[in-house]
Amino acid sequence: MSNNYWIFIVTDHSNINKELTVKNIFNQRMEDELWGLGKSTPNREKLKKGDRVLFYIGNPVKSIGGSARLKTDSFKLDKKAKKKYGHEISFYNTDYGVKLEDIDIWQNKIKMDVLISQLSFIENKNYWYTYFQGGVRKISEEDYNFILENRDKKLTEQIKEVEDLENEYQFALEMHLEEFMYRNWDNINWGSNLKLYQTADQDGRQFPADIWSIDFLAIDQDTDDLVVIELKRGKTSDSTVGQILRYISWVKENIADENQDVRGIIIGKESEDKLEYALKDLDYIDFKSYEIDFKLN
Image (tube, rainbow, N blue to C red; front, top):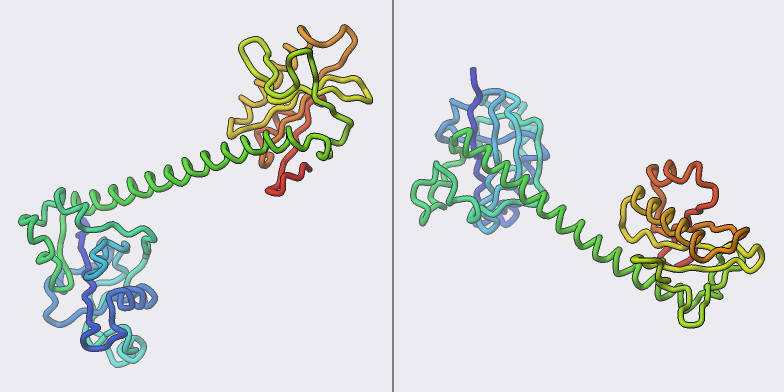
């Protein structure tokens, strides 16, 4: 037997009691895991265990705010149940109810006005709000899935927006980090005595290496090693390691003396498993993380 699909409608009752707003009623019913039903609620007798339900939170929210599965058929509330769920905020002055499970309260609710044009059960799109009366409305599986897909799409878009902002922030931070390091080179504890490499017309910042640029090229004044320093800048671990290896090879071939060693330092916000594995056998490349105060560890 296939399941049915429903929208349970939360209606504002603050005219009766100022505490009985749509938000309060919805939150309390989610906490109780039980939905109160009136004797004359449309479709009450058709509600069956396993049915899927979405929750429409009415005016002023006017949004789909969550989903659940029916844990029971509709049943009559006995005295014990009424006592358990009888607190005023639940507004369970009703004789029937249905228990809920697999409750998912959506932190990012979907405004109904972005959905109505594609929902088949709303025939008159101009007066869509009239379809959200009566407490329980049956919908098709297609409409149910469309709402869930729209929710997933919105979440994906929101996640992407957050990731894009984080990437922009990270890139800007690392651009400032490069400038900070350049201006405060002598105050940074590198763990060795590093000085920016210098030529007649170029210092070691953004040092040209064929068609590339090395973030910093330095020289260890104690060992005479040349040191390639690269900021991770949000790149993947594999590409960062490949990049610094390419720069080290170029420096060995074009800058270093015959017996002069070349090593590398990667600087990033934090290490990760991929990076650690990539550097495991490369003892001439170190990773240093930075904190917000630009302290190198």
